[in-house]
Length: 200
Image 1: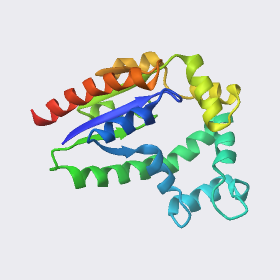
Image 2 (image 1 turned 60 degrees about the vertical axis):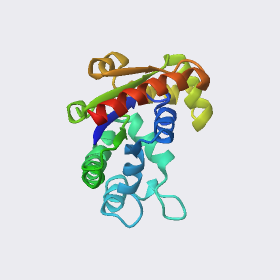
Image 3 (image 1 turned 180 degrees about the vertical axis):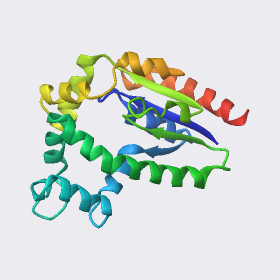
């Protein structure tokens, strides 16, 4: 098994790169999906979030109102730290379980994590891939895709590691300033490299 960490700032295109790698044969584990599982209704994580943040973070149907919760945590670093203390250990546990299942598979396993640098996870991976894109492009992508204001997007960008910090841990940089057609050849080259490393 080759364990690959895939990261990049909000709006850089991590999910697109992950999808293209999955098409080529990678096993993709997404930290955001694990985080949603960690606080799904019926879990201890869900109960702890409601206890910590109050019933105002629930929608009328009883599920978490993720938009409301995001607005709270991105406006207050202490509140964000409180949520992370609930979510991150559970994400790490779930990730460890998935990786253990794949340990002897010989597969390329890609872990998509927006906080790979912030959490100091880079040393755990055989290869770290960082997706880059210019800040103005990232803001416009996220604002249109997620119905957020440019100010909200910039606040989320400010809460993440800088591009320079990500580049310090990168083994491979993927430039996603262009079109999908321009991205595909980069992913072809990346996949060939990852397959060769997995076989070695």
